[in-house]
Amino acid sequence: METPAPADPLGSGEPVEKPAPPPKKATPTQFFLKGLAIVLPPILTLVILVWIGQMIYGYVVSPVTTSVRFVIAEIIDKSRPTSEFESAPGLPPLEFCGSDYRLPPALAQQYLNELEVNGRRRNTADLQTRLAAEAYVPFGERAVPYADFVQVASRMRPVDWPATATGLYMELVTFRYFKSLGSLSALATALTIIGLYFLGRFVTARMGQWLLSRFELLVLARLPIISSIYSSVKQVTDFFFSERAVAYNRVVAVEFPRRGIWTIGFAMGESLMEMTLAAGEPMVSIMIPAAPMPMTGWVVTVPKSAIIDLNMTLDQAFQYFLSCGVLVPEHQRATPEMLHRELARRLATTFGAPGNVPGQPGGEGWRGVPPGTADDFRPPAPSDGRPPTSGWGGPPPGYPAAGAAPAHPGLFPAGPPPGTSPPDPPSPGRPLRDDEGRSS
Image 1 (cartoon, rainbow, N blue to C red):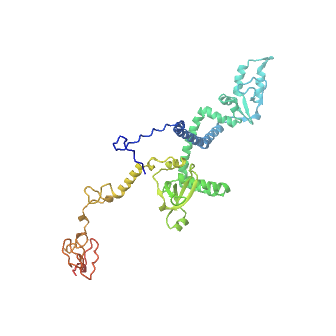
Image 2: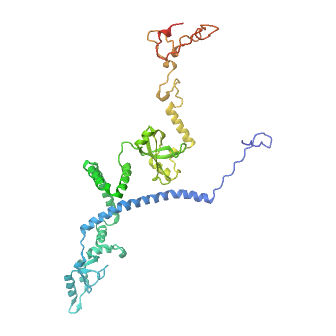
């Protein structure tokens, strides 16, 4: 109960308004939290995008890029077995590898003989140019031409040099044909998209479907552990990427875990046959996500009549779960204005626009029924020419007309004769029977 305002001390008798309390000053903690609330959304968005990009690059782009580099490296590979060459310690060193290079035996002896003429060593500059074109650098059991080795060594640090000839040629593919790893990754992504497109066209064809089914049945289904994992993953991927006649991936509300507690879920599909038969009505499988990780949760089966379709997209539902119910779509906020607007919209849908009452001027009626007067709803007159004596056109048989004198004054001022009961009025529009039209 509110306390009345004190009267005016000057004697006017009017209550004196209390002064409004001064506004509370914001504290440094509130300023900090406000700034954190502004900065965190873009930071978290960037972190999530980076995480998704790293997953795509690590599991899709990088394997395809490596495969492209490996295939091209095998094509341009000019390495030879290291056993076909021998070292030449007396020859001048080469850039990036020093004296650790190999030459064919005959060529190594020839260069040694040319290096010393009459006991004097010749100028090594011209000899180094010739050695660069003929020398091989060992990489384990294989040796690669020095010219190919220089292109890779000049662009990488010594600690990053590959340990095998195949690895060196894979790096050479990047530097010689694509200039950078980014260009190669872009090509690998384009090849992946094109390959998936043609693979889908092939599997869509009848021959492709037959080959895929035979491979799954004869190979994958017979592997003990792989078969169970593959079948589960295939069901999930088929649900998300296959075309279905009915789209069940919609957002619904169900009472879970007990009546009176509402939970948001995803309608996944029709339930099991035995559950449907036991319930006696169609059943739907609902996935109840767990917050804040909606990829996990529970699967429940509820009657189709017990679910409510929500006006929410899958993205909005995922945001709702990831934020633990904080991020609510704007059109789903239960504010007084939104509730009033939604209630008015539903009333207008059910009964027509406000003021549209049947029989009133300008009214459009309910659910599109045209307005009219009471005469428009009278039953039709009998086809034999008699005046209407039932329905809205006149009193029922045995009753006097409005304003007429009572037929039996004192006993039944406005009723039938003593000892008789009024007959049931016929339904509107039905012609009277002969016994109904006769007077008692």
